[in-house]
Image (cartoon, rainbow, N blue to C red):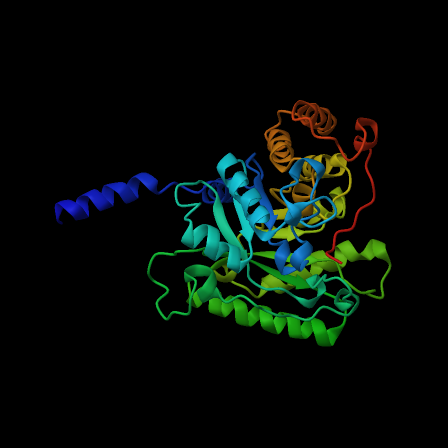
Length: 363
C-alpha cells in the first residue's frame, strides 16, 4: 500500500465511530431481561407526514426575518439546523430523517461520519400519515405506499452495487397500520413482504412501526392493544431472524399490554412512539413507565420538535432513562433550564406537571 493509501486508511480509522445503537442492541440481545440499555431516537421525519408545517410554528425567541416571523412556520433550513444541533449534542442513538434530509445532512454534509448516532430514513409513507392541510386521507383505511427507495436512502441514487460502503443510511423505519379491514390489511402485508425481501437482498436493516387503526376497527377500544400484539406476533412468526426488524415502535397501551409482548418473546426489542405534543409530564412519564415495564426504546418526534427548547428537552429524557431523574423532577429541571435561557414556557410549571390525554396516531 502506498504512503497516501496508509494515510487515508489511518484517517478513515480515526473518524469511524462505533454506533451506540449497535452496542445497545448487542447488549440487550445478550441479556434481554437484565440489560439496562435504552434506545433513544429523535424522529425528524415529519416532513413526510405534515409537509411544510412539519418544523412547527416560529416562537418569539426564534424570529429571523420575514420568513420566520411569529405566526409562520419554520423553514426547511431551520428544521435542518435543529437536526444538526441534536447531532452535535450527541444524546440520541438514532436520528430518523426523510430520504431528502439523509441526502443533505448525511451524504453531502457528512454530519454523522464521526458521530455515535445512527442515521435512519422513513422507508415508507402510508396514507394515514398524509396529514396535509385540508386533506382527509387519515380518515380512510391506511393504504401502503413508498416514496423513498432503498437505493436512494443508502446512496442518493439508483445502483446495482449494494456491497460498497454506505453513503447515507442502511437503516429505515417501515410502518404498518392494521385496520381490521381484510382487503387493506392484506395489501399492507403484501407490501411489507416485498420490502423485507428487497431489504435483505440490498443489505438494508429496518425497525417496524405499528400504528393503532386509523379508522374505527369495529372492536371496543380496550381490545386494540391485544389486536396489535397478536398481529405483531402473527406477522413475525413467518419471518426468520435475517428478515426481522431490529426493534419495534408501538403506541403505548399501558404496562399490561407492553409487558405481555415483552414477556412473550424476549428476542423482540419493544419500543414506543411518543404521540402528540401534550404536556412535558406526558413525555417524561411515558418514557419512565415504558422502561419500568420492559420497553427498551422510544422514538419522540412532535414531543421534541414542538417543545420550547428541544436540546434541553432531550437532555431530560436522557437523564430519565439513565435513572438520574424521576419524571416530576425532570419537568421542574426543564422549567428551570427554560428560565435560564429566558424562554417563556407554553404552560405554567403546575400545568406542565399534569398528564393529559394525547393521541398515538398521526392524524
